[in-house]
Length: 442
Image (cartoon, rainbow, N blue to C red; front, side, top):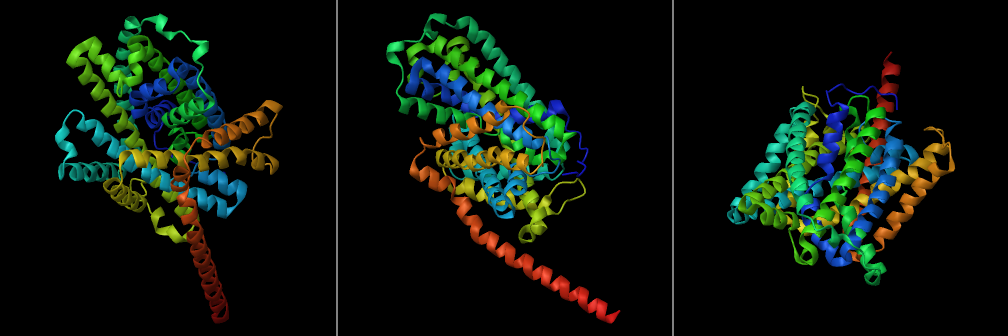
């Protein structure tokens, strides 16, 4: 817990941009219509409700992050609170989720690009682009955090400017009377839960920032600030965009598969539609960059503590874990070539709950063991309780097969942990024999 972080130039502002890039992606462009179809205008209330849930989970991550400077995030918190086995399981899950997310986002980028240039969805162009994107990101990450930091900043600013133009034009085109709520059409509990489950997916990615704590400047202070700032900003952005979609499209929003694109075309013709397509590609590209940066660091953090993957912790002269980058990129490439975008997104989203649950629960254990500042008031205990109860409620709306696929890595981790333990015991035994023999010779 007292390790000094490397100074790699990732400032607080860059960390906020990195976290925003990890959150704001395709969900902003594709979800408004699905939410309206389920709950109508009440979707605005559901967005606020989910934002409150995400803020409570983010607060738990922030509290944990304020006590550590090492890479690892949820893996590190689980290991410190619940021991090596649970930590190993969450570490495997974090890496597994990262590779699936990287693969899903790459496939999603291809789908978005296909809406502009359909030819890219045909073989062999599809396969060439998937391999090319993942390989290019792997090479870029091998040059360290600085280049990722700069590219993330550029993408965030570009994405922000395009969305700002959309919001400014969209607000003036809105019919504010469309934002009214009809108490007679209050959604059912099932519709509310399912819409909340879908919206929760749109906030995925905020938990990635603590994974690269060692790559940042003053992580104990800056990571909590950056994470909570990004969640608040994303919540406002999602709410405003949903309001514009309702106020501009009205009932037609329920049938729209790309609401922001439809609005842009309505207001700016083909040019507006083209700009929104560019914004969507840039947004998804930003999330891919974050995923390609964080995922190998998840693996190297795991490798630093477990001899089973010890070689994956090797770094090149730029301070980048090149073995972890190569292995993660290769597996992500295979997943992207063999799985569909929708399937991979669902599995990735459900899998994240294991990290959130253990992180929220870890607060109570670390508080009891004196590993962090004690809860100074009852409401600080209430926040992780609310977060855990909310996640249980959200998971109740997931399909059984989604839960099985989503938590499959936990079952995979059991035999791997057994193998890891045996290897560690054998290494210690050989080391002990070596020391004894040297003493005898001496």
